[in-house]
Image (cartoon, rainbow, N blue to C red; front, side, top):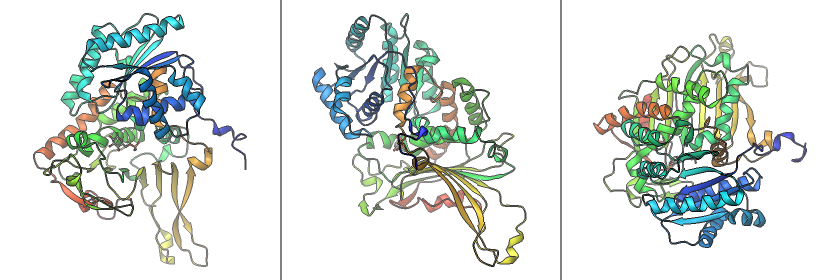
Length: 503
Ligand code: BG6
């Protein structure tokens, strides 16, 4: 077997040219910065993928010196980096880090950020690109963008200014529209990077390779051969310390509106003419426009009660810290959708997501129609199943295709077997974290893996009517014990003979 060094497929991120950049994180000490952004930046530094000139400002309300912030960043990287940090790489990175104290609506903060960034420009002898990362509560997004505009920080002669906006992008269609309008008053769309971290996952991007770089699958990828699709994002974790956010959000807003609909569009889109940001996003938006919001009876919402997950007793949602005892927020959502276009009409697409389910698994399962005539049945065949193509996003990233095979022996007995490709064994390398890829793309100005303004609105247009119907009492809230596959009510979304895949 080839060793790691000999295997040409083991390279990590390619060294794409990235322009010199000063990055500013609004929310520099927050959960996202500590768990994801700082570790991602470290790993990019470790792989030599950051631009040669890279500086970072963290903004927070904390009374921190530059050194205290560097210490906080060091701890966060130690705790959350996917590889143990190398002292020299970490020191070199932290030497280029500074902290600015203040609240996001205080103009003085912007002055201080500008002063840091200008000093670095001067040192470099050129204007560096600026990347502003909004890792803050969404209620601050409009104010931050407006202040960047008022202070003239949204444009720079000779360099690019880009703004990354975290989710949630509004909590309804109306809010998303207002937010887009406010953002576009200051920035051009090409400067805006609405993040959906699922698009940074290697396996999600592989969906496009699987579909459009293989001649074998595309002829089957339509209503003539596909019986139905199941997209699952199951989590075993609860809501941790996020009750404040989660209780106002719920599963539909938190995961369906963004991550699950993104997976659906990549699965269903037409081949783009070129793999460029707008060609791809044009095709994705067309898919979203072809989806009618599901009617009552085609949606399920549920909340977890106490149960056992991974051998441990866990409380129910209503007992979680910070959750109001009469909360009706759904921690599970399932929908039956259809993409009403030439390729997909009549193919049910089932989406489901939930907290505190039996295990963590994110997958897309495409179930083909049964063969038209099963001549083997008379021979006492057992268990022939239609073929299924399962793309596992996480964990055990890979693709498996189920085929019917003959069980050895004199009789013609059939059972399903799997043909599998696993990332871990095929490429012998650890996939980079989604945020590593997305940060690099944002610095390079490549918006392919980010949500465009019209796309975010089209996603809300599907979810808004569901939220409204639920508010009026449609498809009442069901319950499921933690550690199970979800509520029994979800089975009723499917016709007899079709079942959810096991979680
Ligand atoms: C986030 C949600 O967007 O995605 C979380 O807000 C969820 O509630 C997370 O846990 C899941 O991401 P991943 O990458 O672990 O599947």
